Image (cartoon, rainbow, N blue to C red; front, side):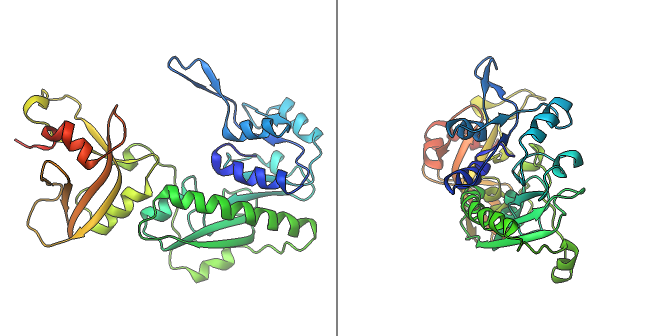
Length: 319
């Protein structure tokens, strides 16, 4: 059971590893295209169909027809990777239970966006966890974990790809252990004593991604890379000259995908833009400057700072 690209690697590993995948459950096709009229299958559905697998796409996981179809598959074990919360009637269905692959070292970063939040919080390592599903989300007994480092310049995209690969490998090992009767699982509560605080990973919304330039240098740097490449940290731009707008007008927004930290002493107000107008854009913050390397103006393509300055320099000028 899964939907995005992250889940495809695990499904592919199971198929190519010779495991009998009796069916795949994924989200219904989403409308796409200019007029939202073209059904767009999920990455998991695309791979599943290419592999000749049975695909179920229920609108509701409690629908009686879907539950009958799922039961008819007669699966010994259900596997969940990047899907939605399952009702008890679903996760209790197979005799060996239902396991989940989660992209964090549980009990840390329970929730919908563990990869983003681990990078945003400046973690130096993260990992993947397999666990048995239970009533509360991401709280079931842990079967196994695998750790990976987070480099100082890794963004969420790089960490996503590393965890996707590590997760597929861990999942196969977990499945083998379950079928061999060697999957000793431990309560997450037993791990609480080894951590000073539990950090959640709630769903990220647009307003979550707004940059607060009053935060310290390292915190802003981690925030930007933790939201790159998706959904993207953003800020509003000052408007002046030809770009000046009337009071109440919506200010242009800019997404920032890559940046550098430049430690320095200065007395500028936080959020002050400093640029030579040709090659670089720096934003003054507590402890130094954030140098913007890659950005995207709303409605435009992603570009380097130099490319942006060639066409939009006046947007960074204050009155």
